[in-house]
Image (cartoon, rainbow, N blue to C red; front, side, top):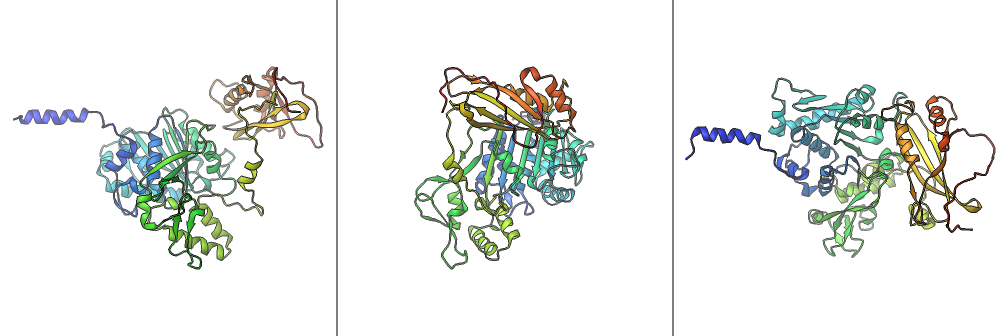
Length: 492
């Protein structure tokens, strides 16, 4: 029998043991208790009710990803996901955390109505605020090893005042595109992580208009989509509104999901069984940003009793019957998680794909020279790379957007957007012949003349074929004596 001293020593030593090695999603299910303020299904967190959250938490755990874009409909657990991320990087891997909302009022509301109840329901979070140097108020939580700030994306001070390893941006498409002439708030927030090792940057929300920042960023990611196995035939498929069916004249009542493979019905009561077997499909397996995980889920993925398939069908019929543009936009953005296209004539993706040519390499065989046009804005550089072949054949090879402050000194020894632009303009492109081909010449726009950094950048790089340029009215063409890959077959 052990003495009291031995028991005390062993108990004390357990405090020095490293934390149990489990994945982030396993940790969340083991430790997070949900209050009614945070979930319509209170109690111990069960990710079987939201398999898509399990998938993105596993991605957060993967060290190869440090950027995340989640486009989602309502009632799919976006806020719950953000609360879990904040709790994990407070309790397990203490870090500086910034959580941005579109405005200060919403930031305070999320802190008071969502995160504070999470703290009250979970003693392990409460215990983080017991020391004399800790603080727990509505906008700021200071704990051992870091802090959590609830910030406004409309506040320049919030965007530039602190650095953080973990930055979460909620409802991104509600942000202003240019904040007080200082640039895009998304990039300003991203800059907060530059000096932080192993940083994680999250963009979450429902999409907005045709200029959706969420969709623009999602296109750079691996574009993950959750697929579920049909309970009848076992075929995996993602959830599309076009597969939601209801009896004619039923007004949407009794709606069911129809498997696109066997056409059998899956009812609301089958959801838990249907969602049990899931996997990810990556629609962009070679993303332009390899560290970028993207996820798309619409309202059909929701397990919330507040958003059933029947309710989605009824809502759809109501929104379109009244021909209320604002209501149709709400349904498209918030339920379908799609952009609301206001153009009179819509261009279907299938129409474009039918006309697309598939190249086996970055640069097709009939192209022998590359040039680049660089449009410089105050917060970014947009580069379009064109390929030139015989008989004036032209192909668009690539389009790249680099975000950053273009007023920075191009010759600075510190990291600037100009250094990233240099790297891109010097990168090799894989030619169909098997060789590598480089950009021969590039032209940077200096049209408005308000940014002297552009001319300075070009002035020291003219020997590399990088020149300042400006547009002129009328059509003028000049031949470019370019470099062509030898032994290459050109289309005539």
